[in-house]
Image 1 (cartoon, rainbow, N blue to C red):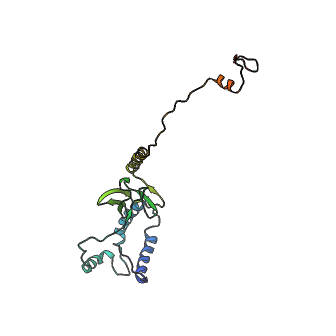
Image 2: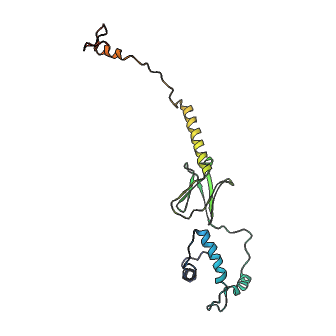
Image 3: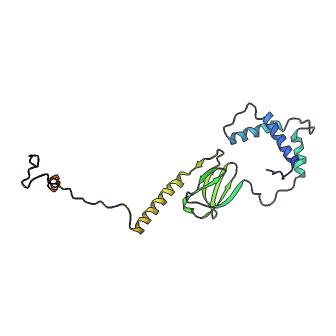
Length: 206
């Protein structure tokens, strides 16, 4: 991948011309199920496209490859960093955000710094060199991607934290209290609805 320099219309024009060629020669009549399918079809199509005679260069692009490779510099000893990377402190909701999508991380590292790296296919989260989350890259927008193991760990930690808090404060589930159940005749006597002999004011026997 080559990033064009700022304010370099010539380089950006080359990219735009290539994209225009793809739009008119590769895309028409094709359908794609995802970016993997797009890349697979483009790779197969480039084999044919690069073998075609180009009037602009006077030969097929493949005829120039040997000359181009001979003029290239050797690769550096350390591979260049590609993709997207960042270091963040994992919040209490144990998710990190990449391009509007949220990816879950092992909740045991909540509050610690994690390193997030994303390429075209994978999102990997590490903490201290250990992998604490790995997901397939999602190219939709505003999605939440959760590992089932991370969800279960979060539930277990929340349960333990609640139990520890209740034990420390002396609170928790209230114990069952036995309540005396009085006979209804006691209320009749209290409100003067029965006489001392047990006869109701309306003449009925209580």
